[in-house]
Length: 122
Figure (cartoon, rainbow, N blue to C red):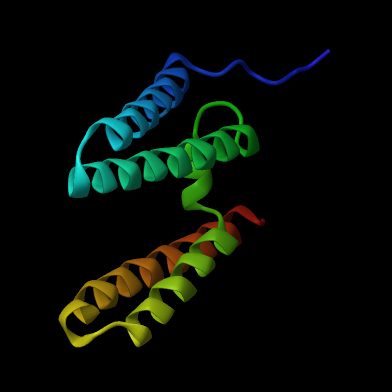
């Protein structure tokens, strides 16, 4: 019925590791006192976010070559560039260098994605 390729062992391990890390962080949020519990809760939330993101990416890009497919996706590269530029413009002077570097990398990624899309005719 379904002609999707089955998920690789690497994808399954990634999802299981993120789920276990989120669970461990949630348990740590309850067990650890004060600032350690808050840090653990934030890490659990981050793992939960990454778990949902990984599931969405794995469903949207089936089969091998996920990284290459995402690398050649022009809308994704453009969105990352816009977010990096907005963070650069809204950040304080101490962190601005970080967002300038992120914006430069995102701009290079966007140029690469556009050139690859034009070269492949997509």
